[in-house]
Length: 96
Image 1 (cartoon, rainbow, N blue to C red):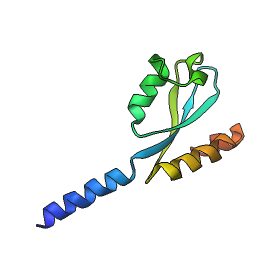
Image 2: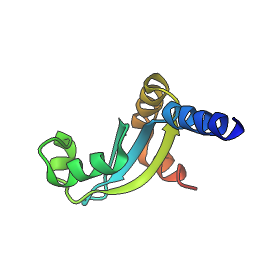
Image 3: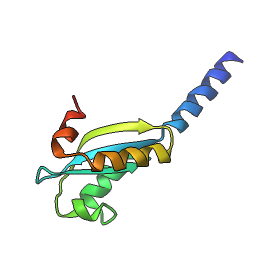
Image 4: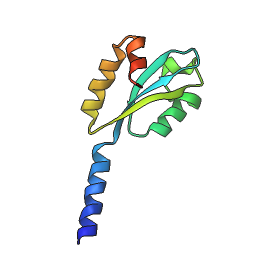
């Protein structure tokens, strides 16, 4: 019974932290910030699909610069908005 309970708690925690805010570094050294539930898929879209952002389309290839997990979309969206307002120097400080 304890093993099933531990597994259920693990699955609940994984579901809670499904949203990620990420910063990509583009080929022209600029940054792009976004949110997603599937970071690998989203980076692939930015690099090779028309489903990537208009901003990154002409700045390929992009690479992951920074990412952080959030428990829900609302918190992730708020952090995305906050980061987008930061100057470049403060975005660079995020990885320290």
